[in-house]
Length: 231
Image (cartoon, rainbow, N blue to C red; front, top):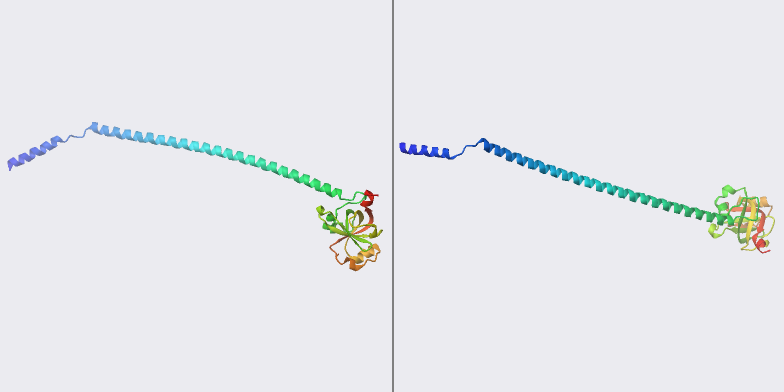
């Protein structure tokens, strides 16, 4: 037993001798390696941050350039729209002038010192013109009895029609299709009033198609344009 105990003690002493103690140098090496790893991580993080910053800057530049391009496109589109609006306005003005010239050409030319209106304007604004003295120009489309005829605007001015009652002449003086100019006083159609104003005894049955919504011009001056153009 004693020998065995001594043998065990010797083995234990041998194992203790074989393990090398941890020195300060070993600890320093570990610390240095940790520092190197930390520095590498820091450098990597820094590089990654710079890359991200560069990418952000590039994205911002691209966005700014895109914004400038969009702004330029919007400005160009605005200029094109403005030019288009100016062209439309010019065309509308020219069209308006042409229409006015056409209308002026169809206003009374021979009648003097009287307001000239188109039949369509008169018919569309009857309340404004009722009781007023005006001059009109139109084509006879139908004679009615011996003292009345139906006068019409050309179709491009509306083709409106009014009734003309002649007090100084008869319908035998005119033919359907004659262009005439008439100066007279505007009324709404009312047969008793017309007969009172003109002193005429009109045949009621001839005016069944007319009512208070229709314009009537009691004429005091009529000029047959056909007689002027072809004496």
